Image (cartoon, rainbow, N blue to C red; front, side, top):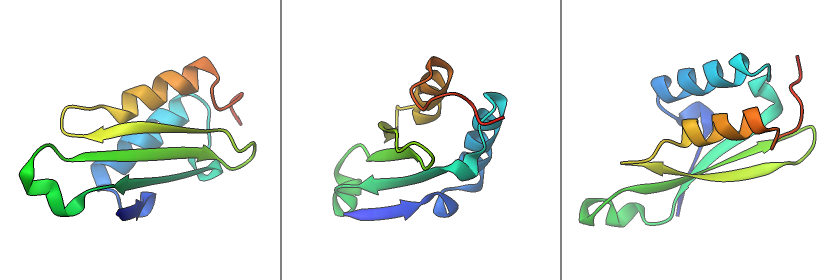
Length: 91
């Protein structure tokens, strides 16, 4: 199982996430974000499926999102930010 920390995500993916968190009044540095690819060796055999875990450091609230081809973890996370899943904004 391969794990990547947020600073290892693509620049576009980082920029999108930073913009989404800021637009909802959250400081992204209050969050631990990493992904896991349970089958990196099987990537050529089919759809690449990652799981992105987002955890708010200040309160421990966490969610996992599907990521990879045909998914939009950013959109799912944004919906949770707006719904208060991670608590109130820090700004």
